[in-house]
Image (tube, rainbow, N blue to C red):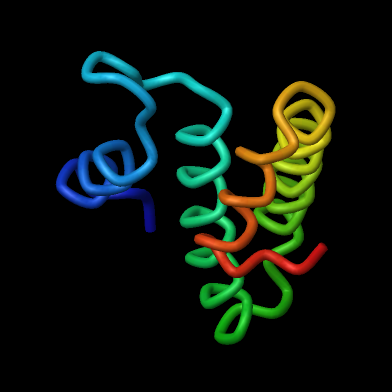
Amino acid sequence: MSLTKDRKSELIGEFKRADADTGSAEVQIALLSDRITQLTQHFKKHAKDHASRRGLLMMVSRRRRLLDYLKRVAPNRYLDVIQRLNIRK
């Protein structure tokens, strides 16, 4: 299951920093977090789907790199994002 257009627009609207912002670190982290949550639910039913599990691990790694970047560049925005998304760490 992928992100619907409405859900993606909702997430972008919630995390954007400016009116035309669709690619800031906060927006990318929010979109990845939503996809990670969906895949986690998928694996509760389909435990042997190893190809999708590889994709999940790649998404988690990308989100971690974006979070590390945000923490280095703007610590206040980093704390805000992890609090709003309920991400541990």
